[in-house]
Image (tube, rainbow, N blue to C red):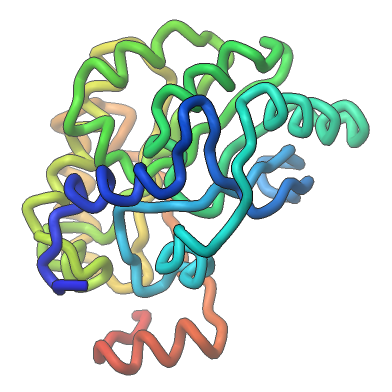
Length: 238
């Protein structure tokens, strides 16, 4: 892929591969330990190519990965996991949930409100379209975790290979969610940032919303494949 790709273009192209009407591609359903225990459906397809991504093979081969499931089947599986494990949280993870908008909204309508749904997203599409955030505001059992890749435009481009201007869409996502009254918080990949970059981003986030400056620090999970990719791009965690 061109090292300066446009994530919005990739979102459209990938969306056609992983979405089929109300159906979306998934590659597994599981209970996970995060958030104190959470029912998880891992979807296929993303608009970023983060060098530290642990689902790299699925991100880079959306056409050959996963199986299509309708929102009703995904809801049934998530609810079953939560009820069987006595969990009260659910999420979509693995790739980027917002690529299949109709599917996501249908899924949110089907999940009972006693299960808190955590939407883990890179925020690109929510930052591009204010209406998407407004549509999410209809669901009181929703919380959005916006995962920001790096602390500034340069770091974002280094880590994702994308046009640095797209970094601003991640910040816009928080602005749009806040305006719409959607519960949300930022998580920031800080493994490759020095304290000056972190402090600078903290000030930018404070300008969007006072609570956003106290963000969740996200650390890269390292394995041999990720280490090889980082070495090829000349990147090392700090």
